[in-house]
Length: 255
Image (cartoon, rainbow, N blue to C red; front, side):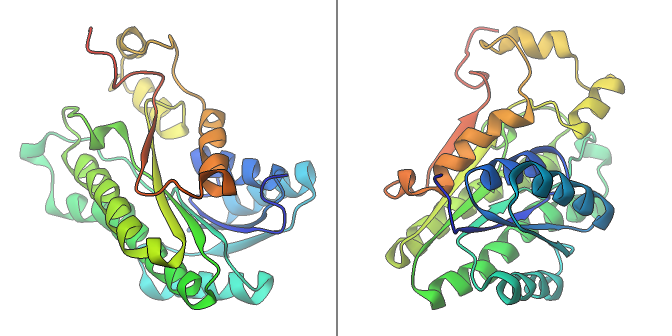
């Protein structure tokens, strides 16, 4: 197993991409810390991971946009497992609104969770990794909207573009500590949030799939392989990279 005896701290781990990645890391031998505001979802995901992999799972409730709560979650992880080797920042929200009517409250809410939350978790876990002196792996989840404009996504695009630039900056700063910082940029993945937008008619599946060379929406499991690679020693010379997992959506110039 690629991640035996490693400890992975996964935000947004109760469902969706975070839940799938957490399970995938556990299948490769990692002990898991699941972090989210929604304890019930975390407990349900923790039970699934424990039952399917036999790996220990710690549930740490926290709002990633709150520095004190993030610090408490990190301390819980260290008290339980003694270290954190891997950080995966999956916590996030979508925000769909015409820019002319987007409220400042919703703008700040989106950036607080998606960008501030990613920074705070990187900072708090990074401090531990630097003190420990044995390196580490940080994986941030950005989005194709960090690379290409999609209407009515101003706050979401700004937050995810910020995550992409933060990833590259931290990669440069922390390479000297043997901490690799990379990002995965998912395309249209069939999460609950995306399905809700489909049900509301915001997303048109046929139109989306027509642009995806792979011919389908992605599934959350499609993000597991990239995450395992970036979390393992296989990627020790990979840092500051943004790996697109979009079925070829961004590469396709023929629409």
